[in-house]
Length: 283
Image 1 (cartoon, rainbow, N blue to C red):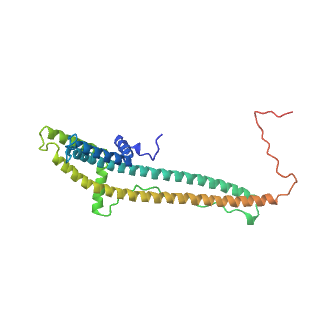
Image 2 (image 1 turned 90 degrees about the horizontal axis):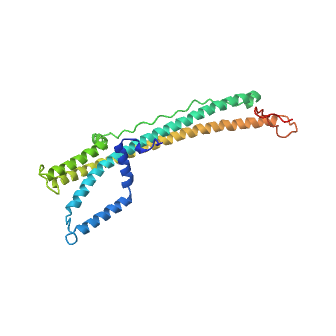
Image 3 (image 1 turned 45 degrees about the vertical axis):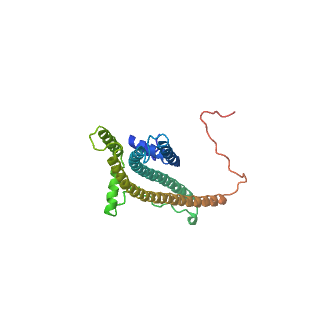
């Protein structure tokens, strides 16, 4: 069964973006990229194989297209991780509420035991009721992007709009369609598609700053979730300590009641007899 905190609970595109984010976000990817680029430049030089001499137009074109697509994948990954954080916050809230519910039921049980013990205790030794009001915690709020300025509002809209699988698909279709139309002569942008590379580089330059704003927004969201989780934990801990105080008071009263009983010389009390329906008594 999938966990509620799993980011793979969204659409197929979200699962693909999460898979790519996990596989590509490693230093191994960096090493492979650098190594492949160096090998390509060495083998593609005019004095070696010469299939892509300086300034390496094929390498630049492939790298530019891959970078453009990965930018949108990163945006989708940011949105997916943010949604996973919201689900994790909701799960923490639900768990804390369930724990508090159990604490309230335990409180009622302690109160019932205290009333029974008070019937045998002296008036000055009687226990106070465990009558604290039920402690509730505030439900987690969806962390909206910071919108303090017009620029941040624009960036938030861009992060939300571009962080989707549709943006990745549209970008791939536009790039492939542009290349196909240019190869057949419909568009005046022959190989290695200099105008496409120019537009792609410009888009990457702008989107890199959008990604930085998105990281800032996600950082604020994570900070708020950390604070909410800490508050929930503090509330649960407070309730547990309160119940423990009443249990300790009950223990002291029980010990005083036992100490006041007359000693019949038998030592420990006799064990309670159990009547088992399926076992006949021995003769």
